[in-house]
Image 1 (cartoon, rainbow, N blue to C red):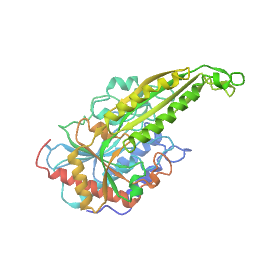
Image 2: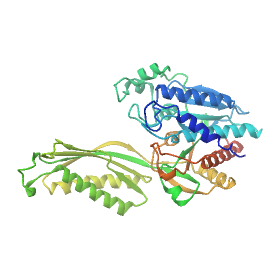
Image 3: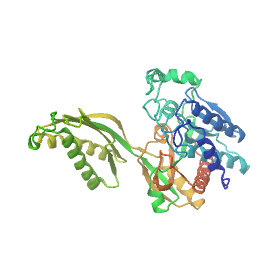
Length: 416
């Protein structure tokens, strides 16, 4: 089966117009008016394609194509419908669009599935409203519970998530929730932009994800001594900024040398105190985002950061390290990787195996059911910005590969 020419790109273009007025790119934050407009549009497309639409109590959107055998666990595919601030049109939306096209291909083939097929658009994957990512998929897997709906606070005005959800028009309650587990769901399949440059540079059409990287978030505080910028001799200063920069330069060099291709490290936020142009900084705090597909490397880099205390102590300063977040690497299902590879070959799509440095809904669903991901090339390797783009041809090939995997799952003799 072939995907419809131009349909996926047209769907994404129309969805991209469901955005907050006055924002660059696409801004469709969860539970906003723009988000509701996006959901209404996707819901109508689902109905037009003959799917049964269901919106759960916190806003995850489903479109079901009923299978012939009610005893078979369903096959789910999709991604998220929310965006980052001033984001792009394709992140998340591409996965929903490819799943919708796969549903269309199933119907057009005239050969129904034994399994029910569900197109899924998750909510609050990006974490833009409440500071915690992957909330929609965590709700579906039982990792995010009702009491947290009452405890999480909106970043802008401090309202509870429960209040925001109710204002949006939903219950925010656990009842009527469809839990994703092995009894109900055979597999979750996600098509997504790579969000990096590898596929495009190698001129490869698809990336089969083997592992979603683990993450350690650390906050490092270097404590020196504040002083007047004009009166303290250079050799007698305890400049916390210089101590922090010394640490960062060393870490950047060592991570590049020791773990090239296996780990990345980013200092995304840095603050000097007191932050005055005429003061020697007495305190410098910065964050470290450490990512790797290997748990042992995450541990080694975290331990390396701790040894940096000696580097600033030699300068008469001290250092403290606080772990903000920790998430281990998540492997994608090995059988689904084989199915993706076989389907790529059948669709004449070139592919390579790769890891994901970014987090996705698949890593949450993988804790409960087999999950698999396929990456498509982002032009220029850019994502989370207005310039984000995936070609229509690549999207159509992605849908065709997805359709092939769905058929393979549906033909399986075994039950899981």
